[in-house]
Image 1: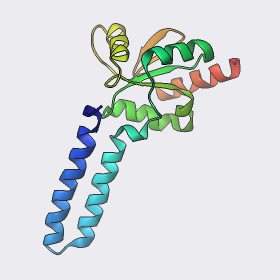
Image 2: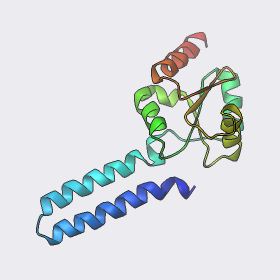
Image 3: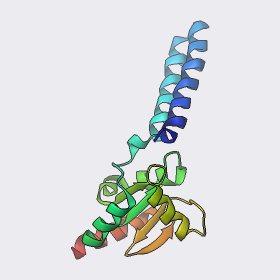
Length: 148
């Protein structure tokens, strides 16, 4: 759990140090602007951007019932962030598993990717897909929704 927050905390700390330096040089406008950029970057790289994660076993059980895809992800992954942002509101209809919080989820990802923890790995109808196109994932979600 702590590992997920390392990058966001470092971004805020670095931004604070740089902003303090600018503020001491009597450039408060740039200091505030730069600090806001660092806080925004920290927010985008934090687990807060993603819907609440559940365990791999629970996600698999829910997916078996409702047919929705399961997305295995980890904080700080730019491809996971890209998928999340491109899914938009559809992201709430997908089961998210943070592999840094769930060892069973990490094992599923390693099994699907020849021992590597390559994310995002999306499992649809029991078949894993590594770093799929977000449009394809959105299509799978809507297809499962119509079929239900």
